Length: 137
Image (tube, rainbow, N blue to C red; front, top):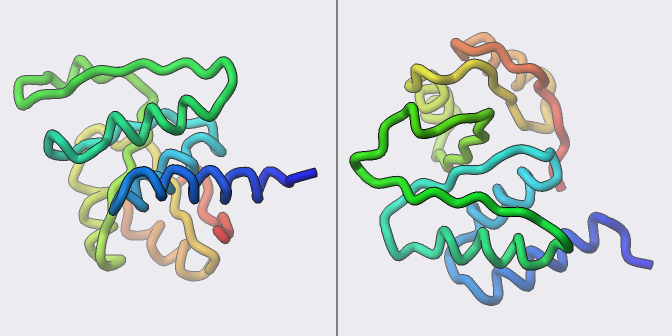
């Protein structure tokens, strides 16, 4: 019988074979699914954001999906949450700057396999993480 880990790896492989260059989005959606968090994908039109979400949703029996198309005229009040924002970064400094650049960040989570590194990053965040160590495969 397949394990949950192998099911997620298979799902990631299947979706990645259908949608190119969206590895971060696919991994983020699967991570949100595992942690039972909400997700907002932000980016320019035509970059397969909705397609990736719909492919993940289609793989889950009785899953529900709420969609809202954001435009440059969307007001922050239209976003209600909690919301999990997934964003890529190139360095630890950029990740901290991104996390601290929002006025809406009430809580955060640092994901790393190093407890020491998590504690150092935590000190630089304006919002205090609720947790700071999760080992990713």
